[in-house]
Length: 164
Image (cartoon, rainbow, N blue to C red; front, side, top):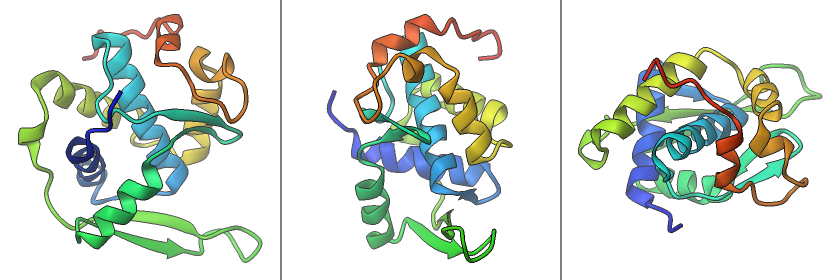
């Protein structure tokens, strides 16, 4: 599945814009992307961004996340701040802030509905809560640590899409 860079960037901008202009934490952003792609795949048999996710100890991590967000910073689409929230013994929290409005023309109607659903269902949760949720699901649970999570494993989740 090839990466759709334009859509990938716009998903991040869209999520930021819908969550009061920022996503707090790399873990939270990674999980919101995971749910965007895997929920969409479960319902429509394709992912939105085209990224591959690996099963890390803190949950699913999109392989291209670092590269995409770095490019977005260079293009001035995104700003990433480091905030020391929890004390010196903890790594700083990365706060992703969108610098522009999302370009909705890159999404089809179903993609926009799914992204809105992701914001409604998962937007108020923090990275730790999202990691716990993703750990309990078949795709992550059935994948060996550090290996690629097959999109096909979404079919074992049985997600209720009645709120779509």
